[in-house]
Length: 153
Image 1 (cartoon, rainbow, N blue to C red):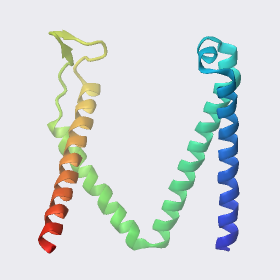
Image 2 (cartoon, rainbow, N blue to C red):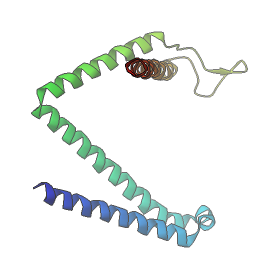
Image 3 (cartoon, rainbow, N blue to C red):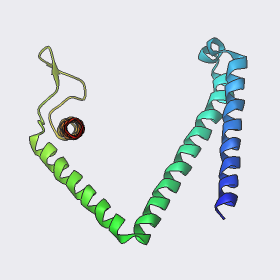
């Protein structure tokens, strides 16, 4: 069963690569300067390539989520760990949201376009704080592991 699935996946990957190579050759033949100025040529070459890429991305995301969900259903201990991880991330998100500033975004004393105080500003600050919190935790884990490996040797 595994070798049959492996062969099918290899064929699908090869087909995707072949289609991508086809688009690459078409773009290479036309040249990038012509593609920049000719809208009809862009629609005939680049639009199908972008559509193909988006379809592959969507199919890959759906398959990844489906297999992850199936694996969590089959293994309840994995589901428990996943839910705990999501819960911890939610706690960090709440902390980041509570630390976020919702003031107007200014440059040289003037409020930037779409930079008014309010919800969007609050969520942008939350994203920055959330990234910083996770970065500090990641760096701390890296540093701890580094020091631990030095002590062992």
